[in-house]
Image 1: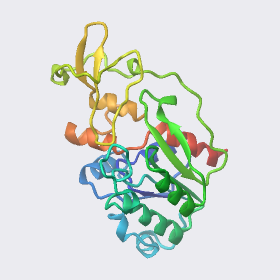
Image 2: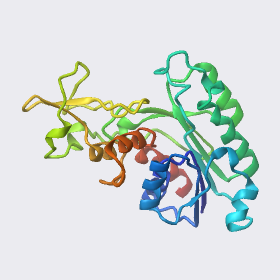
Image 3: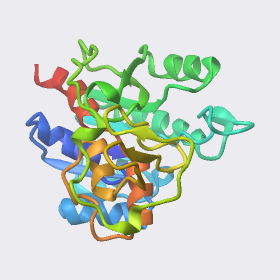
Image 4: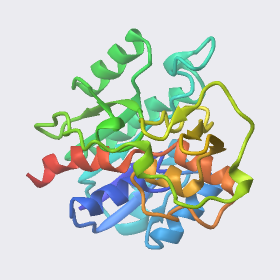
Length: 269
């Protein structure tokens, strides 16, 4: 399959494709963050990086590999202007979340067989209705808590058939914690802590990390980058090679791999 991943980030879509054994002929990626690109290229050096989503056209893709057809187009357009966490949010008129319209433009131009769009579940009813009208399909809300150790509700618009809720795998925060963590991750007590026996809230839209209280000794610390990778269902050290600050940011912008893999099973089936 030829894949076009818009707002590709660290190529979590490709990890998800591999999980469900969908063969990849060419993987085209649109991303502008240099650290995210570095992670993607470290893990998948054959990725064809196309640059800014605003510059992508059918002719541009053809200039790389001839007149190819895109089988799957996938992307999570920026959510900052849509999220309830953003004060005075501008919605789809915002500079960042307005990039949704680039997704629509490219979708109409490339006409892929399959498409997936992801965004936050906390967007306004009006924004949700606009996206639904433009894409012609109703979204499904899936909480990553069903397949991972974090609560992360996201809407997915897709024409892949028979997408339902995944089974709850019963994964909790304690299941993804590293057994030994450097003291540099210890922080001062905060009120918004969660115990390791429950599900963590994981990564929020501002790329902040919740602290955790380890109930056996009351140590309060930040989650490590590896634990963040596990929250997003990525392999350990997938984001290694950039600073921890940039690893947190990249993970915060990422798909939950197991959720996307669940959706992709509709293609396989």
